[in-house]
Length: 118
Image (cartoon, rainbow, N blue to C red; front, top):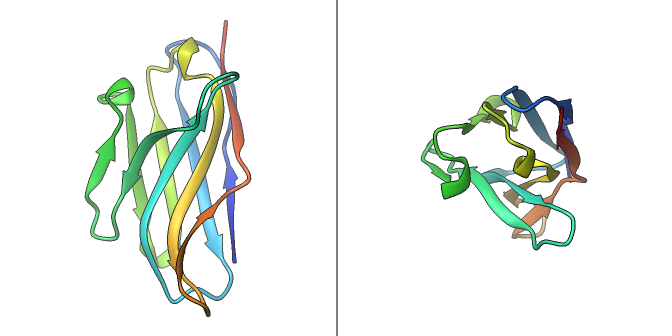
């Protein structure tokens, strides 16, 4: 079972990016999926997450700019990032609580780098 994130890159301030994260393997269920980020010298923090039913939760720093969504049929979570700021620069990690052959547990993707700079 793994999470594969993609979509990071270099973008100018005010620009947009869309991150994707696909869960693969023997999965019997997925609860909350979400995105965290870690900037250099800082702790990893929650950016946004979304329940299986579609309820979202955003960090105050990204409200009104970032939107998490998911496609349950594709086991995929997205993060639409608009009006990007230099302080959004970080490695973004996807996270999902999944039921595999063993039990429910949290899984992490490998991270994708987002750099906001002119």
